[in-house]
Amino acid sequence: MKNRRLLDTVAGLTRLMETPAPDEETILKSSCQLMASLVAHDDWLPDALAKPHPDYYTQYLLYGDPLERFSLVSFVWGPGQTTPIHDHTVWGVIAMLRGAELDQHYRRTSEGIVQAGGESRLHQGEVACVSPRIGDIHRVSNAYDDRVSISIHLYGGNIGRIRRSVYNPATGEPKEFVSGYSNDMTPNLWAPAA
Image 1 (cartoon, rainbow, N blue to C red):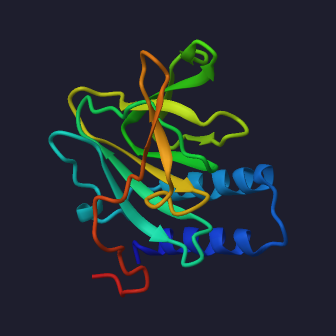
Image 2: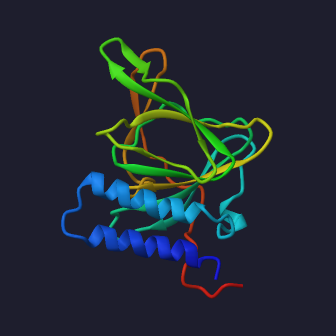
């Protein structure tokens, strides 16, 4: 059953969230292992949740924990698509399923918003983390101008409902937003494989 990979990941994350008072470092370490295992195989993501939009990236909800402790999302990047500079306000793990992403971190200063280090590249099978503790403001883009890239994101909350910010690159001024999701429903993880 192809969706077994996603179901096993959700089960592992649920068990992790049920441990007594897990700290962020423990959550990120264990979540990175689960996410790396998930993206080690590219045979489980349904086509409907891997469909690019011609004008902007899409964010499909794969699973939302009923207690909103975490959410799993597929980000589908059309050729050359990019995000604005934004934050998350919660911890997150990004795992590359197909293609590659470019990631530029930023930090706020009294003069506005400035780049924090150089741009990094996340390749298929690799994982990276974000959080307010380790660095939460970045801009992400598809590393390719001629093909689709897909990353699977795990967040420490329901990212489609969390109030967070995009930042004006010239002034650093934040503007609040709630991202929502590109799909109306989540897949049924427990349905038998077709």
